[in-house]
Length: 244
Figure 1: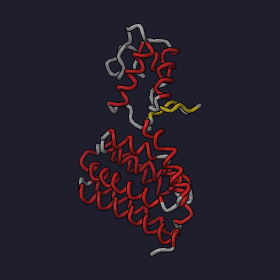
Figure 2: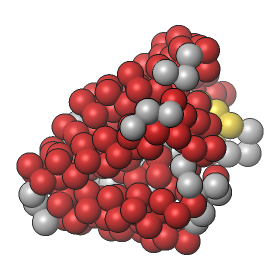
Figure 3: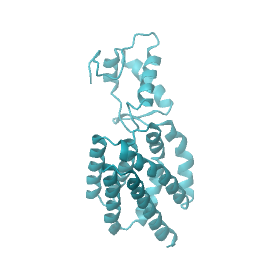
Figure 4: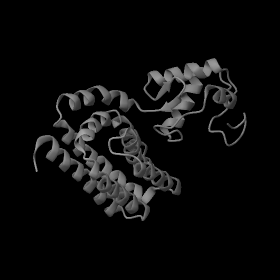
């Protein structure tokens, strides 16, 4: 972590009286400006205290306020990560809808097509080398995982989140973060209905989306993403409802 006064530090030294409030405002500013993105860990209390030149108690108060506002989540032993108030607002209604009526999975997919089709198209024009490298690393993890393995679920979700991150559009990133919990029920259905032999095809579809993004082909990136989600729609229809 950068020492106090280091120009590379994203924080500004705090001198005002209401220290926790000022720290909170800086933290919110860094989140809303995209310096700290959804899913990304923020510095530790110790490092923030050193950067800002304030007590750890002031940092704790600011973090607690940000947590109560639904901007971050604090995990015991896992650090503090940026989330989104969207996540807290969407979690109860979406989880209930997807748990009570499996057919709502298809409506969830329709929304994914709108959001993720746009994200894939946008990412193909905005993705930076680091974004491309991240997507490629995730695909490597998917190659090593089985469809029934939680590693596949995690990598699959990470890949789609990485595409949203590659748009460098804060709203898109926060919307995807807000939908994350709803993917759990989606994966529950998909896990029991997606046959092992389909892994090769699903992996191929993800790679085609990645290739289009990497080669800067917006229209193709969108088409490949929609083809992938249409396929998922079809196999759930066929296996779950006996249609097709």
